[in-house]
Length: 435
Image 1: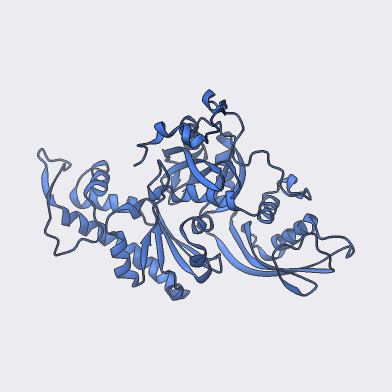
Image 2 (image 1 turned 60 degrees about the vertical axis):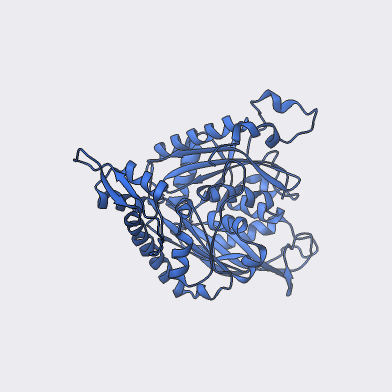
């Protein structure tokens, strides 16, 4: 991982999350967190750019105050909404076979992919390189500085809706921030939650969000399939609210405090919970097991829909099983319910960083992690796709600070006497944040 300070933006289905992280000696530490509810998003889509931009501003401000870093640009995540994932093969001729292959040829390849391989209603987001061939010699990961007459590229392209990408860019820019990179969220998450072997041999990941659930299959270290179910934690809250005739606020509190996704019928403890009912003076009492039944019913429905999608592509043959994360994955019993329905090994990923030991931050952390470990070739390709002119430099992207401006607001960060990292200097601020 490349040392530096990075800032990421996760535009989730119900809230905006910002993470500021310091990578020091290849170790990542979260030093700033921002989280803001957003009414400009519906079912994972931005429906109000101005409202979303305001939420981005507020979330960034929170992260700035916690970290002491003034954020200038953001690594932005792109969800699996309307994504198209296709393998491709393209071939280009080298104009001057006596000269070394350089970034100009990469740009030519990208333009060819855009024109020939991407549907008209989509825009190219990313390219996952499998291998290059130079004059028939295969297994090449980076052809630059080599010589040859013909270059071939085998890989997988990610194309997303032009509308989705435009609205994300517009919201970030209207909030007053630049975009340093745009990364496909399932790809970033897979690099965070999976081991190298799990990505190579094949594993399923499920992100249980507030407004929707996304599932993706990873094999050969690439995302091969991604889908979205338009149901998530908010639906569980609404179910509890409707069944118990209580407010959404009360329903959310019940879900978080006593909710359980897979209650054992033999479990002895089944306490009565007092519930404030709309239109009734006194509270009613319901058993915890009854609330668990409501939660289990909705989650079972979500998992069954996910199962249908994954069975169509044979994803359950992948040996890695399932890794779950996302805010709704924090409900006790989700793992057991998932194993019962999917009939494969299931485990839950919970971030283990000071201040963000909660699965709802997995996407935001994954974006920073992915950017910090990105190789130089991938950076060049990403910047070319984003139409960043400096990507054409033969030495690669020229970024003085990829994710944040260099302005620091806390004077104590200027003191290098003890050569402490930023994370050590602000531990007291974060010790109980989001525990």
